[in-house]
Image (cartoon, rainbow, N blue to C red; front, side, top):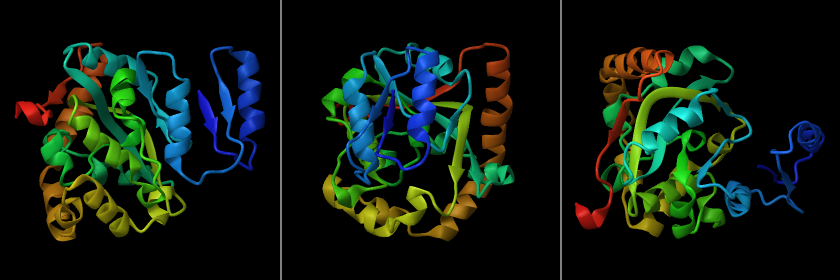
Length: 252
């Protein structure tokens, strides 16, 4: 399902041509530009008919086995309602930045406790059960949450189900100066998330020095579990290594 937020480029022409080649592709164009990522995503969720939903922003890429590996991880435990993994970061067109953004698995485990401090989930890496999305009412379309509406949703999802992390690289995330996340005042947005959910993510992320030191210290672990072990598991078709902790408050 391709949701076009009234773009002014060649999106319509390109996708309509693909629709003629493959009837499984569905193209939906919004009547006017919403300037809110949540609006397009929610329309896609509404149109989705399957048991699972996965998101792919227009500037990101998936690897061919992304969905296969994540569904295998999700089916390993019926209590898991959402899975995320890692997307290799390409910063301003340069792939060599990737290792600096490579997280150790312990920093990628998402539950109500960890998500109250920061967002460790890349939106285009997510696979989630459609029933969980419907129960959470999808993304919040408030303008004040633009660019952090995904973070807002992950926290609410963590209150309803378990979130698993697969320590494999499942695609590419482009980070550049023109991206939505880069254009927004993230401090103001994080404060809006905190006020809405009653958490303290803004205060937890203020210390850049501690964040850099922690990231560098965890790099050897990230290289092993994500680059080495993850790559070997995919190549040999072994079950993905899945990291998960209970994320339902009522059971903690």
